[in-house]
Image 1 (tube, rainbow, N blue to C red):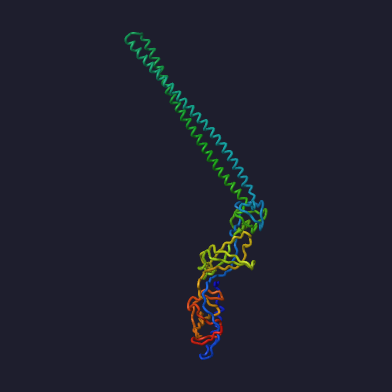
Image 2: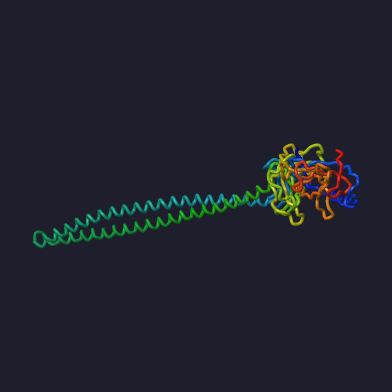
Length: 432
């Protein structure tokens, strides 16, 4: 046997108990009072809580423009289904488009400077190569002149020796000396040519470095301009508003030609798009029962729009906190809504399974009474029909069946609903 017990009020039974308390006790020795009895039974009880529920879109997004301008076109209206990336509207941004054209022209100009700088590098490299060739030529001449100087020196020394031995005329020594001096002069000229060529190489390399620096600067300027152009193009792309996900346009908040601005404030939204292929069911559980709600708990929801149908889901998540104003905790369940049957905003009733008690002791709620101070008790009857009051501790209660936690055993018999009060030891007669 399985019983579903909810957290409904026990007010009716309290009133009944108080009414019965007003009836005087019967005098002992009177004829036994006829009563009906019920027995303590075992059953599986399921504690539930029933709370109002609301259907919410899985995602709900206000669409705001990222750029300012006049609304150029509107592609959708209220109720239209959209897919992710679909065009919703477009904002006219002629100023951004003009700035993009100017920036593109500046990029073209900087790229031309890059080409010019590359040509300058090639020219500077050619000058370096030419200067290095002149060094090699000057050094070759330097070597040849050194050889000539050595030959002239040798001839001069030999002539000087012959003149000293008076083997030849003295004027031949003068001629040899003149040739030696001429070759030494040529050597000095060759050395100067090498130095000059080396200086030309340094100048050419400096010009090459300058040309390379000019090229790097031109490339850097081009990259900066390209980044600025890319940023402009991103802003121009923002002028086209697109759907962030598959959903339905629930609100259109602007008209063609409206001047719109870049703002995240709600009053500046152009559209409200809801994802309804999957929805969330929100319900708020009172503080006294919130601790019993866990992820995965069964949740059954009914809606006035579908009086003969229920939706079975599970608790997907909870807020994990009690709202200080309402003393309730948000509980959420997800539902695949491909057919669009559930509409965001629908109101219903959610029944959440809190706990299951196997082999619980149960009694009909009609057998329960309450003392003046609100304590529950029953009238237990033994095999001889003798009454004794038994205080009980009750658990789950669905209004028709109660769970007996303490005070009774299985198969104990207790008096069912009866207006009369009884006293311990009183004799009754069971009629059922």
